[in-house]
Figure 1 (cartoon, one colour):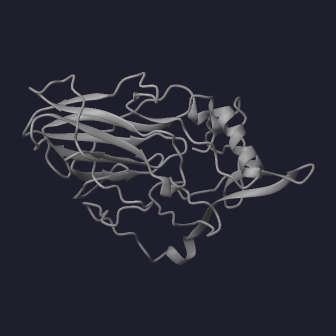
Figure 2 (cartoon, one colour):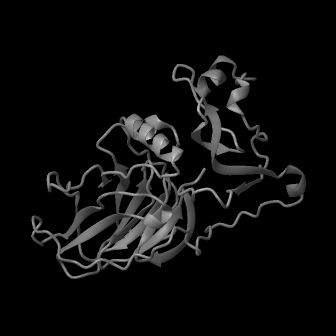
Figure 3 (cartoon, rainbow, N blue to C red):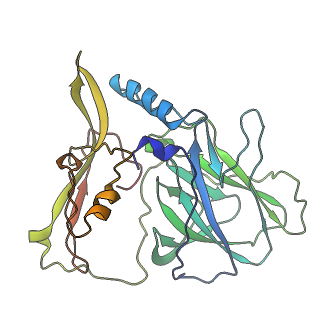
Length: 301
């Protein structure tokens, strides 16, 4: 997810039906939130690299989008709108497709019952706000149990994740029978300033991890940035790294092409630093670590 082209082009969700650990009436489908840059991802990456040379962070995103829409600072554009009926329960499939922003979401006056985390059914728990790291997915159930009217759905940059956005996003959720053209006057929940996973995530079906082979099979995976001096003049090229190495894929030679060319024994270049895993059905153990001096990684490797 650290490749520059990830920030440009067409994007859309795929839904794999899975179990829900709480009942609901309607499935509203995927609800994507993302940061948005007016300039191209490649220009943004170039500026970020220059900033890193001087120990600075990447440039801030211009705004956040909710399902592809938001109003700009100039007030051009529109807010995403959702109609709900009092008394019904709605399943919402939240996805953070951002390039460089942890995003906290909420619906004014309504709590969210969280039922899945990254496709894993979990024991339901309730929250007022929910932080989505980059690439993270949560399924939540929202009950329409407030007075009829319009309410703001908020998607806000979580600055404590070291991400930066010039403007947050708003969507409008309106109860049927209310004025569907009115803007809400609802009040936001208090957003906690923290970049941490919820502490009460627990799988609904417990699957114990076998420990007998852990000590012999465990491996480590370091997640960090490096500033290797590779440019004349002692400038540093800053790269994201796994186990202190990075990868630069040729566009005409994607990794899957090596598998297609030789399905039984693909021959990857040494520079790709391919990490072997065990066969299907076997357990792979990883201890994922980050150097304490590195910037926090706001999304999962």
